[in-house]
Length: 303
Length: 263
Ligand SMILES: Nc1ncnc2c1ncn2[C@@H]1O[C@H](COP(=O)(O)OP(=O)(O)OP(=O)(O)O)[C@@H](O)[C@H]1O
Ligand SMILES: [Mg+2]
Image: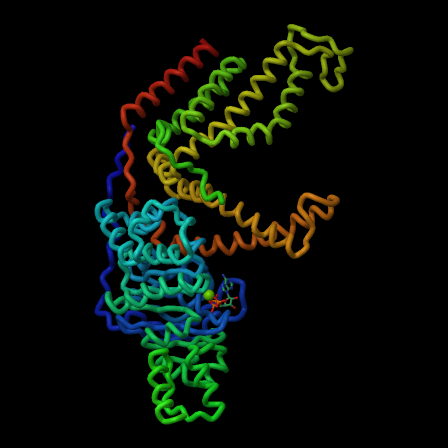
């Protein structure tokens, strides 16, 4: 009773046509079904390949919704009404199905537990490639590669639910890496992790950007990390894109931070405090390394 | 913390292919339905219990099954005892009461049939765990797929099975949290208090499950679930000679019991 399935060709990876932007979002307005107010309103921005973009904003700003737009689950899975155009890796999300987009955009979600559903880490990471109909040898190769990138080798046979939070979230990253996407969209991947777990995950994210040149769109409240690694910060507020700037310009602008309820990196908070006490800090640090430099200089000047 | 029903070990049963185990399971279930003399079903139960021991599965689980279902079993037995229309009278109890269909006698057939029903129930209750505890869900799913069950269905079935323990865990967590907040104990107080307590457990559980299922849906779709191609499987399974033997034995046993019943 052996049934050998013949393999019709696997899902081809659509080649992007002359792509200058990894993400090109134009005038997107989206309303969830059975709701009045749009979750996103006339959002437009472009991201070149290789850029590390952080998406900040208070709760209910629409950050997750924007992430969902980028791989087509909004509106394909959620329904609702969408206007405007989203082009990712040269593919219009209107024209291409989610499985096609999945080979270009990897989406990692906040809650590790409920995005892992397979019995072993191995089957978890292989899941996407199996769905795409890749031959087993290739899947094995990709899984090994993805587990190496996320520093999970040796855990292949473990049950995902028995791993630590940090490990689970790295499994989730490995799962999308196995499909070799050009763009990684991470929706608060560390908000449910302890500091050690967050550190492990963020280290991987930074490396995927710096060493492999993956484009990253990261939703997080960890502005210390954003200040160190992101090239650019987008701020969403009540469905509107209210700021698109460098981390430095965002984190040193106290009015903007307060207005949109964004907690700046710790060194910025300290510097704001010093400034308010009249310490003449001329150059605002945004990372610990910079702060060390600036405060050393202050000390030398006898402040 | 229970994470999954599968209990890893390297026994004969664990090494069998999920397909042959599935076939053997269905055969035993079928025979338990075809034959209705308790001796035969006792024989089936013997096979199940022997396999249970051979697979080194926890005996206290078996004990729990008996504990939870002994009440129902007793009820079923009594109903057969009093109402089965037999011919060989064992015990005369009272005048017949036609209104409720009671003949006034306890018959041999009633006893036997009651026993058969109980044993049948035990076979059904113990054989499914035997499969799930010795087979990883991924292999079970593959077996279903190879039996031409649509992948979507096999996936939903096995995923639901794998999520059960985590739902149970969360129920316990919520129960503890509610207890800490002073919501009534689930096992004490009058009916209304207990109902209120259950609601305080169920509502967060359902809301949580709903939120999780939405996340799950996004996660599954984002990983190319349902791509319009023939799915491939990393895991490979092979039927070995023991598997073929088991399948053959199952077939023969099934034919034999058909012959006993109708031959
Ligand atoms: N499935 C849904 N159906 C209807 N409305 C939704 C749905 N999901 C989100 N919303 C609404 O859309 C708006 C934006 O939600 P979204 O989850 O994108 O915010 P967010 O910035 O990710 O918030 P958080 O920081 O809490 O994750 C909110 O007002 C929310 O209530
Ligand atoms: Mg969100």
